[in-house]
Length: 120
Image (cartoon, rainbow, N blue to C red; front, side):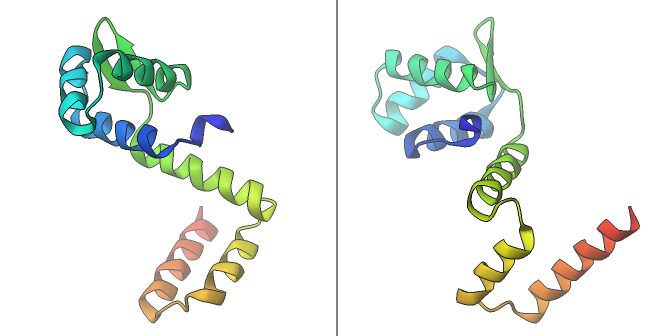
């Protein structure tokens, strides 16, 4: 889903909004001048792009998130696993742990999550 695919600058811009929201669009444009060396028009173009994806909303000059950063990252992870591993979390974990061995704390955390899922 394109909604969850952001380029590097789109991601940095989104992170700035999540950090500062709610924020007036003029104030956001001013922050972007300093943070990214953008012109105001660049900020508004980028904002429109992210609003069209329904990540943020410019409500009468105040920019607010339509989804939390955590929900967005969860969506990104879901899309990645769907596209790369056919939606299989076990395939993802198998591939991931080939390069990085899990320590006992990570294993306990995953087991706790599995146990909580079984209970619900």
